[in-house]
Length: 405
Image 1 (cartoon, rainbow, N blue to C red):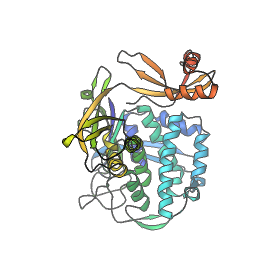
Image 2 (cartoon, rainbow, N blue to C red):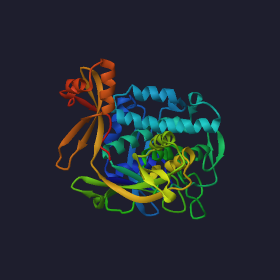
Image 3 (cartoon, rainbow, N blue to C red):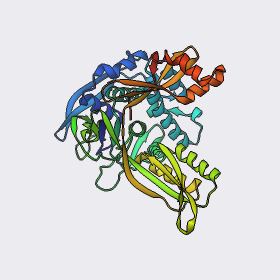
Image 4 (tube, one colour):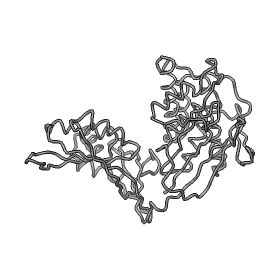
């Protein structure tokens, strides 16, 4: 399983992420192509050169010849620019997710609506380039999972377009709160702005978990150097891992948590609502069955399987949407195959399908049942008629996402 691990001992910034990914081996044309398609070819010059920080080698990225007309940009301007591009939909979605996260944080800080927000530092051309390039590089690498260490908070103050602000700046605090990212702090870290809004927004959207992976089977390392001179080496590194311990002949092991509660004081209707709420909170699946508890009480056992990063949201749902006062939790897992979603053009309209990559390399395709029901309702045909009508067209598809678990 291909994994990316970002280690940020002295912070996260967009240029450090980009430099580390280039040093990892992402071709420069991969990150430049989406910029050229926006017509930005004459607005900037992106250079990268080897350097060192306290004797630690790495790559440093510099943006030259920036166009000042991008010094203040609204979210709607960015959305219009991105949506008008010829990028893959997956790249558009990731870039816009990063900017939406920044806009939400800016709106909270300034007490305004998202529509009223104008980006300043994070709306400049260099931030746009960093976000687009980092997202394009990640798409090129196609990792199954992304890990990142907890970024340092930093301390002191920094000069911004809003004047002198304390570190971490308010937008970083808002991003940390929204995504529940613990910022590392204490006297062992250097002073100054270590984690920038752009860098944290990128990792908040792209990373699956903020921790070190359980094992490090390192294939390649990329080192991105920071621009500031600190009292120690200023660098960020990204490691490409191959987690062979979690793969057998292209079948992947996925660590999960199994949450369970026995409930004897809710109606079937109420427990049905709880199961729906658990799914909304991120449960991969929720099941239930009848049990008999002590003193002959009839009850229902509800089990939910969930990825570790969503576990806390489920705990909140268990205790706020149900009547249980206790929750069992066990470590488990499952073997899974890579899958992706696609959209097919059929005589009855577009339909979503799921593709699965089998261990022998074959790809199987399945029409989503909800889509069959929708087309049946819209066309007035039976489910079987719809299935037969579109079955010969399921290979005429456009990918909506990359392979994932």
